Length: 192
Image 1 (cartoon, rainbow, N blue to C red):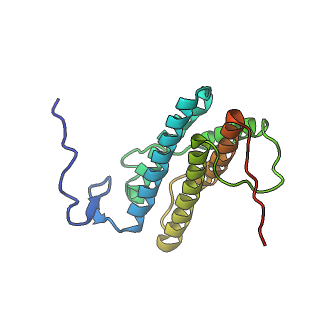
Image 2: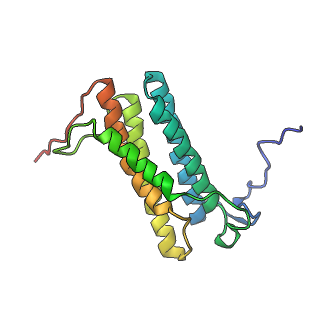
Image 3: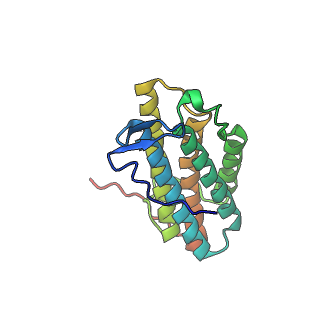
């Protein structure tokens, strides 16, 4: 089997190809949107790496790997024109997965103290990266809504719900990791 080259030189003049082969500007909102999904996915991979180093998070890591695959599903949907999504039979974001994420949130949250104030993002490396994933999820969500408002293009099924819920998931996961590691959350103290 011949190995394909990593570089194709087709994007050297500022365009890139969608799944259909159509070429568009790398500055297009669509490209920015699924590029940010890729960044979120990469941050999630970093989170998994730090959690592996800590040990004891096998169930959460298995779920995160599945979430990364769903982020890839979302990226592939966004990299395809609406009229071609069925043609290419791209994987859909299923409601069942979102419900499973909610169950994961509930399980972790049941082991945490109720919040009475905001916490500062941070903690151990894994918890800190979970907070970065949370903010990255929110960024992708904002871009997705902006893309919808600008283009009026139908969004991938359940994409808004996935991104809204994933930021909640990463927030609770950050707290859950920190509790297991040292239990010290830093609370926001307003300064006037």
